[in-house]
Length: 468
Length: 87
Ligand SMILES: Nc1ncnc2c1ncn2[C@@H]1O[C@H](COP(=O)(O)OP(=O)(O)OP(=O)(O)O)[C@@H](O)[C@H]1O
Ligand SMILES: [Mg+2]
Image 1 (cartoon, helix red, strand yellow):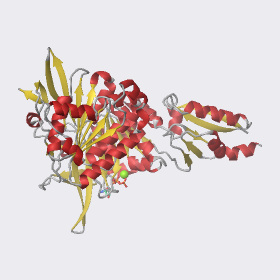
Image 2: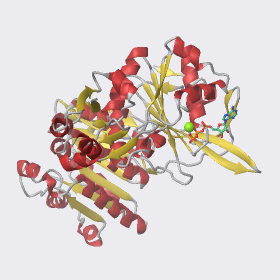
Image 3: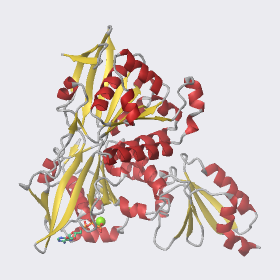
Image 4: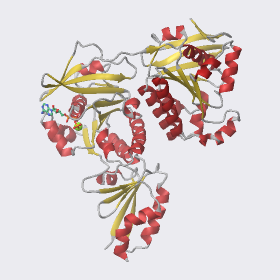
């Protein structure tokens, strides 16, 4: 279901309107108009008789009603009709004192939100603002990571979730939410000729090409107007080659930096030809390669396979262009590895990876990360794994790196696969039928997906060929 | 006069059974304290009334709240005021 924002030009910018099961973030500096925009989105849905649940974390409900009145909105009438419910949610209600520890979850807001949603059959949930909400938490990191559950549970209900978040002046990707959400609507304020000018852009939009044009954003008593600007795009997508020309073409030019590529295989299809071919290409381009090794993907096996293909990667290893992070001891069996999974905590993994990425970037090297997620999914608890994956993906986005994450889809639950797919920017899937292997692209941030194509294996680099 | 301590839990809270045990243990010693346990997934109206956000939350009669699980020493320190009131 697509819900209009009530602002025609904004609908156009976000590919027709707000999609249910998607989560959007409205980002902007203090006073930029996040609350006003979310109120107008509320009104847009209400006018189409779509019920809305508005959660306010900083402003009291009475004040919100008054705020609405200043824009000629009669929110009370919708509350009376049962189309709108306004709810205050904050960790620290007026007059209370808090003592906090880090052992908590946010199941109360999930339960409260779900119940209210059911009561009015809400299809749009506004959460204004997450910044104010998190500000009360002493253990903000724990709160933020638990908030991912809230996002997941609410979007699972076939509703649109709109979060507002205060952004700092300079940041580009500063919060995890921004990476987890499906769309980002950004309001920027600038002082020009002694006039405060607001601009709106869509830096991120899942399943559609993001509109990087910044349009004028004007708030007045009668509503919000957006004027289309003739200014050039604020940023362009940098695409990187995968090393397999045909694949690049099919993906519309390559893989945008900052992408997480999820490669799905069944237990029997060997993903090594794809892995080694791209790896070889990236090494030849002097990129920095980080490999999260595990029981399938480890240094001696990789070296051996390269030798078989008459390809010598030792010079790159000596130069330090390729680094293995051993989380599990690879020389042992899968079962033993499971027991030794605590050798390195996921937090250690993340910080080591980030340090390496920064080191490569210092020497002006682009970074590519490889990892097989299958064991991680099964060894770590679900929450821990999803947190780990989200954080890694966030870092990849922030550092403009590219990650190839391999997964055996037969070895994990369907729910888990669905969640990985939401976070991934590009999904490549291998499938087999009657001794023929196919490759397809099921999702791509550039919109360039493709149907199953026959794949041929070779014994020289590149080890994989896509046939029409 | 009896004072009520509210303990908000939910089925997805792994620390809650432990915390409940500790809390019961402490409160048993004091006559004028009473414990009420509220599962937020079953009693949404109370969760809304007290604006509960995080689980576990312990609401004390003096507008003090304890967010998150803790051990007995920590809890005793927080409840000190009520404990001395009863002795
Ligand atoms: N009645 C009005 N008419 C025109 N413009 C208004 C009116 N009321 C508010 N504004 C504009 O809206 C802006 C504030 O918007 P809003 O409250 O949505 O900000 P916000 O981004 O939510 O800020 P915060 O981070 O403080 O929550 C003001 O700067 C002002 O320009
Ligand atoms: Mg606001």
